[in-house]
Image (cartoon, rainbow, N blue to C red):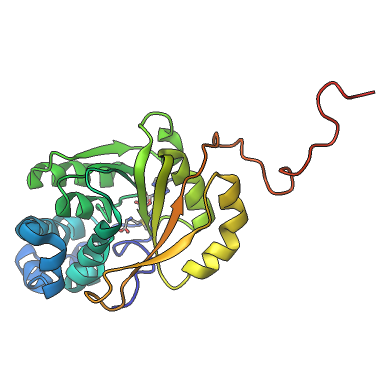
Length: 264
Ligand SMILES: C[S@@+](CC[C@H](N)C(=O)[O-])C[C@H]1O[C@@H](n2cnc3c(N)ncnc32)[C@H](O)[C@@H]1O
């Protein structure tokens, strides 16, 4: 299984709709989707049928609406549902989860399907995607999901601080931390699904993440012994609250020269 370069087959905001000829007819799409792999039963347990219904929605409406690349259909289960679902092992019972840049629901909707105990908020700015998410929540009968249309940085302060903030294929780690850590409660965590770039992104973003109130990022592997390769997740615990835009950079964090009232 190779890691997804982008999200579920799209190129992010502004992606173009594929032409009608590239849309598989729904019945052909379901054939291409195929049966869930053995790992799916471990990840979804008694929610496997519901996960299957979501996989069908992705393979049909998700592709027709240009949210999922048509070539993703045969690998939806392994590369998207199972790959995202294994992250549930890092999330405690009853946690509040905010998924930033959900797209077609990855990983947030997958987690909500796998774990009815979670309280999940999907944050996504593009109307075409939130329309799909709203419909999917409705069709799947999920009562533990709220869809919020907006950019992460716009919804800060409108949502309670989350226990866990998740994201996949949204931005480089430093930028992502700037969007996601303000949405977490102090003591909460950012879980960023990453590929082979994880270590490099930590090196690049480490200083910025510290100024955002984040602890040292740690690479975790999810689904070991279940999927190969396991899913790489960068975990960042939020140690302190920093008002967005008010963080002190490493150069400004040193002793201040000339404090208030010391002029002249
Ligand atoms: C490449 S897609 C990934 C979608 C999904 N997470 C996945 O893995 O399939 C990136 C998504 O992030 C969203 N996005 C971009 N900037 C964002 C921001 N500042 N706040 C929230 N979502 C954002 C885009 O609209 C898009 O749906």
